[in-house]
View 1 (tube, rainbow, N blue to C red):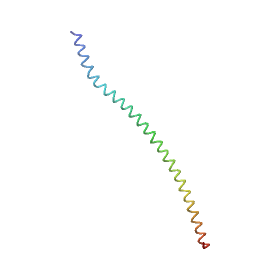
View 2 (view 1 turned 120 degrees about the vertical axis):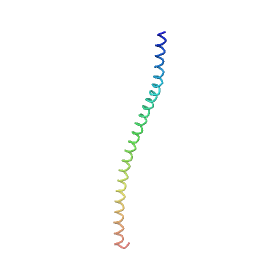
View 3 (view 1 turned 60 degrees about the vertical axis):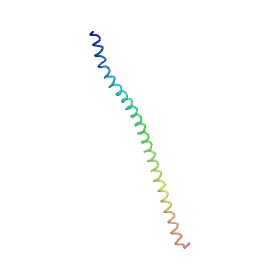
View 4 (view 1 turned 135 degrees about the horizontal axis):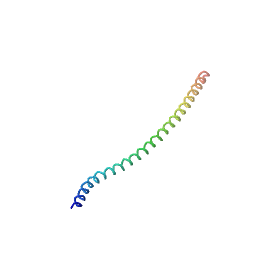
Length: 85
């Protein structure tokens, strides 16, 4: 009879333990997957940030070139106005 009581007690403790452990293990797997997705997203954001910095540098260079051209054109227009063309 004692064997059955021990077995019953073991089952009584084992069922709730499994009931708690299964969702915890599933949650752990989901957290791991979420961490992986987050790391990939952060890498993508970093790449986009680098791309934006590069584009900003190129835009600054183009604006500088454009300003030089506008200055040159204004100078030519002033000379033409002085000559009466």
